[in-house]
Image (cartoon, rainbow, N blue to C red):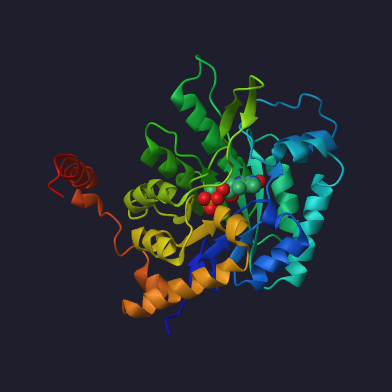
Amino acid sequence: MSDLSVRYIGLDLRNPFVVSSCGLTGTLKGVAQCAAAGAGAVVLKSLFEEQIEAEIGVSDVRRDIDIHPEAPDYLAELGKTHAPRSYLQLIESARKEIDIPVIASVNCVSARWWSEYARQIEAAGASALELNISIMPRSLDQEAAELEIAFYRIVDQVRKKVSLPITVKIGPYFTALPRVVDGIAKSGADGVVLFNRFYQLDVDAESLSLAPGYQFSSQHEMHLPLRWVSILAPQIGCDFAASTGIHSGTDAAKLILAGATVVQLASVLYRQGVKHLSIMIQEFESWLDRHGFASAQEACGTLAQSPSFQPESLERLQYIKALTGLG
Ligand SMILES: Cc1cc2nc3c(=O)[nH]c(=O)nc-3n(C[C@H](O)[C@H](O)[C@H](O)COP(=O)(O)O)c2cc1C
């Protein structure tokens, strides 16, 4: 039997299957169910920057950030059920009762509260901190470089305050993604999560109003993180977690071959139930055995795109083959 354990951002995980930050990891009961189903680690539901502002009485809550599907509920409960204090309690109790790493998550658009709050998250016993940086450019005046610097500044300021491992979860919409990911790693991140799946916007054509879109991913969406993990993992000195569209043990195997140390899962567990995790892990384990990999670590990065291999030429060739029917 292959060894499933991996080392991710300095943490020892029993396997590379991590439950993503989502409603399933927002309570102690939910986190315990993930651990019982075999998760290697959990990322707690994000705490939103606005919740900190509300608890400390700041009134200029900005609602123009790109928020997740459950954020409206969260914001409605500001300062009550999910205030930062109760988030710290969730970390403390999860760490006490669950024997897998518990990664805290904050959804931030600036560095202003996080450096102090990150310290409290560390003191509460979190195994690591995931920064979900959700800066949504809307202004015609904002330059790309200005936005990118905002990412580096957040990471840098949090890094200076805490010694626990930090990961940064970002979306795919950057012109020069390799440079941005490199900048994030150089600012002090131990890992990068590719990618956040943003809140999907829809329009209700009958009521003529904006509406939330379908919130769960489909399996074909995993090709986007697959491409970028395979290009970036061999070039950038940090760990990679793949997120979005990973719905089976075979999908996980593909992302790990591409260079991800771990995969993060949300939609598949909402749709199939948290217990489905154990089936995915079994599927992954038998795939490792079938292909003669002694461990998950041995498989990791086997098919990553070496920089000297000129990935753009390879991809262009595949593209031409697909379009000309020669593939
Ligand atoms: C209901 C729901 C709530 C989510 N809440 C958060 C959140 O609070 N913080 C976060 O970083 N990501 C959040 N996400 C995004 C997931 O962590 C994940 O990155 C995304 O759903 C893509 O992975 P998937 O294809 O496995 O669903 C949420 C996703 C869903 C479906």
